[in-house]
Length: 276
Image (cartoon, rainbow, N blue to C red):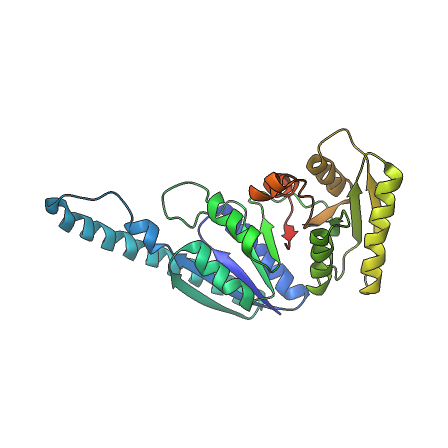
């Protein structure tokens, strides 16, 4: 198994590397560290006067050299951490648009890990949700999003399940990635009707059972939003990881990324596994 780890200088990336190394040791798996120099973003800008063109070229060259130095620093640190943990690793440094470069690499790996607060777009903004959200929507393979502040209360895994094709795909993918190994697994369904939620969760458990994974149903009835209810239940059962793939309630929400999934990713304090 090969796990791609997207590297940049955020706290979320530092946590992502920690989680990736732990997974690599548990599974086992090899890690591939990817650093991107966003040259299109660095050299983009308004037109300059003829007199300013030379200054702009010198400035762009200096910025690109600095970006490459930082990328090499991230890759060197990644290799050192993997070596200290006894995990096999290799690294890639790529120049180009972060969205396209990452999406080109994702299909070559079994799982992609990235920090929630990533900033691949050089110095244009503190967090790069534009890149992150497009990767999550278009990856086509499993992605694990790691928050900068981890609050892991246990080693269980909770799979949010509504019996939709997207949720079923995420459930199967979670099992295929062997992330259930060594964990208590719970399948959680949210509905105003507790009996209906229990029936749906039980179906998810039965599907996991066919894949050789024992799981326990969790029917969730709550006055809170679906996302808040899922996060509260994950904390209650001691989940160290949440998997989600469905809960996209309308065509409009699909256009802007499923609202429940987005809220879970934004507010979770444990890694979130997604597969659309």
